[in-house]
Image (tube, rainbow, N blue to C red; front, side, top):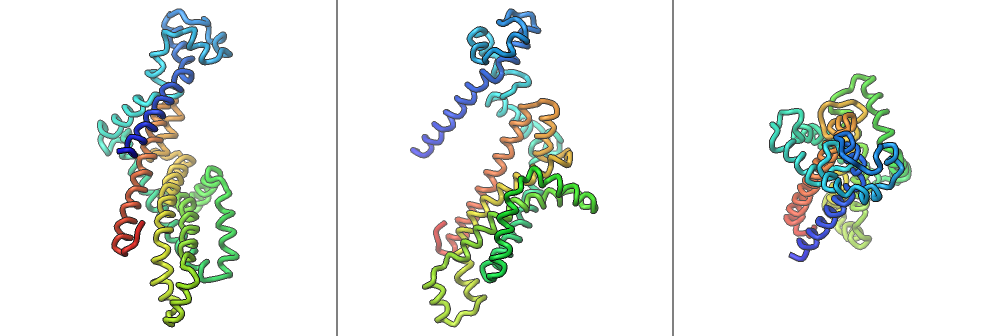
Length: 305
């Protein structure tokens, strides 16, 4: 109960700050609408209001305060506007409708899982090689680290263009971008996990005359699982970001990235925020699923997560 109350207090504080931030963010738009409707506002013209501080406009036009949370196209939508949009685009829309966030979420989820599978497989294979080969450790690991210094927003269009030029289209380019972001956390976590057994444990395996494969399967791999699942949680979130970013330069018509793009084109900030929250909820659900799998698997092995 204490944890629940703490979480609720934090959420209430964030929502309160959010509502408060809507006042200065939306006040100029509200006053512009009021002026066009023939109401008296201060200052009288948009030109005069341009350089006036937002809170000064609020103080001079207190009648408009209650309108800042119901603007049709706000600069910052109020929380209830985002919740309403989420309800309309999930519950009230058919899943097959192109205005349904569930429909767009399925498209993004497919690319996310495909990219996560590719990135995870690549990360685990490279980690095994790095742990067992000094050459791979000295050659591949630095390049893996350097690869993550390139901004994905700059790299994604290059990947899309190159793959499109050789006829690779559809879901695979987005999955490759998702894999690019997800493989590094898995690589680093798996390397750390495979190296987690201490010297005494490795020496004990040598006294048993255990082969390299036996050491890997019976000592290194079980020891690495907690590290691996922690990396999975980071990797699946990164893969989701990669899938969304991969939808932006392609002009996709389906996916959460497409919803963000369409909202920015038409100034639909409520649509943008609802898509962002849908992406956040999807990421939270994926991380929670991995957490459940981790607890079940480690419990069956007699370990603690």
